[in-house]
Image: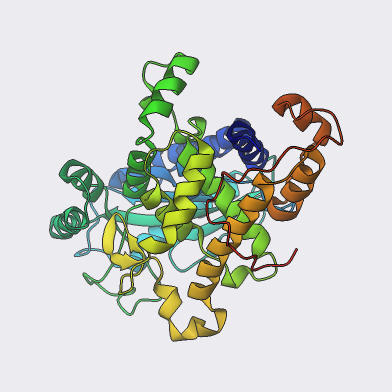
Length: 400
């Protein structure tokens, strides 16, 4: 199969698992509504200068449709109280319940029937409207200057540019965790979190695609593409993360506790990406290199915006030994290579549709594919030519 057709097939899969811009806009309206609520003069948090912001895949523009049509989306949100609260005058419990009380008032005022749920680091609200999702709100305060400086130095040592490291470190925060011994007492022992800094790092990796950037800006007639929300950019790195997460969901549909977590996939994909302008070249690079980016010593998969944190710490936790998390991840990479080879080698539209359904749980139309990709009449095969993954020795781990 020609390189162009292979690329177009992968793009078709990516588009079919993405959510429409209207869903992102619905999520945005939720964020904005909550921001206004927390900023009201009568809100408990208002005197502490609350800053509410998106986190996770909605922030990065890497959300995918659930395999189950009735599945629920995760809508992650941070609530940073920027002034007046410090580790010296508030406990983690006090901060969490301060934010939680305003969130409870919001739930009642908006008629959300299901009770809020306290989680380890956040509060959860479940919405049931045009977009079925639950909202996880993480309370935080700005991290103190000495720790921010430590983060900056660690990032520079880990290879980040000084300007990026400083910008990221300045966004670091201290979050609550009700499993810590220090949770109910005045203490310096707070966990560090930096979802805004992570989004900045991910965007810096996306922006390596200079050629793609220039083409996109010309086509969209946008003078300032950097001002667009990430979900509207659809860069190759975003598409690759979406495709890999969907493939992961299909492979581990019967073993959700043993699957590779999204933050490891996103981090390794971002680290492996080298600015390829085409989605097939990007996938080839990422799947070829991401396994080699896992360190042999701790931290195995460092958080790029806090290199002392290990995203893969569950891999070597004795409590998770039975889940085989590290081996599952390595096996999944090989399975992904084999499955992309299979779909890249599919000789006709009918087999492409079959492979897309089996390996990515997406529905494509054979007739539409022939028309859009120029595959010719039904029954006419195309001489297979592997392009997506060069490792033709990859063996399927999962049987269809």
